[in-house]
Image (cartoon, rainbow, N blue to C red; front, side, top):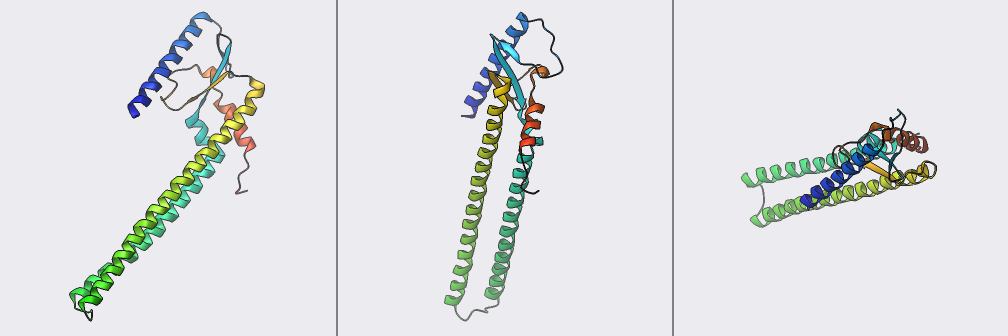
Length: 198
């Protein structure tokens, strides 16, 4: 599956390189410092650097901060319960070694109780991790919807036929920075977003 992903990305990147090189060979116009749409058979093309966008988009920063806090709270809760459980295990071990239980049956009951606490803690850990993953997926959808909704509105005036995303070296291996509209998109997104903390 991962191999297919790399092959598809490689093919897409190769296609883009070929298209850009064909376009560059037909046009000898100089690029200006402001974002200019690339043209390919009459198509207006631009790209957005996703890494830069996410690192500076206030909505993403707030979501990330909230998730870090929830993750830390979860970790602290689980660590506290794990420490309490460890203490109970040590106490049980000490009592067992000192023959402090009235009968073997009572020792077995205490052992079963501690075993149940351990199972409950593992189930709680799994549940909390599942909830965190689910919330993270929900946040990713909100983020994507936010960016897509803004791009749809933004593009009404700009009339781009294609806006590409660039994440490191995943999708776009090379493009002239004149076609980079990241800063415009970032400014528009941040101007539209109102942080709930304010």
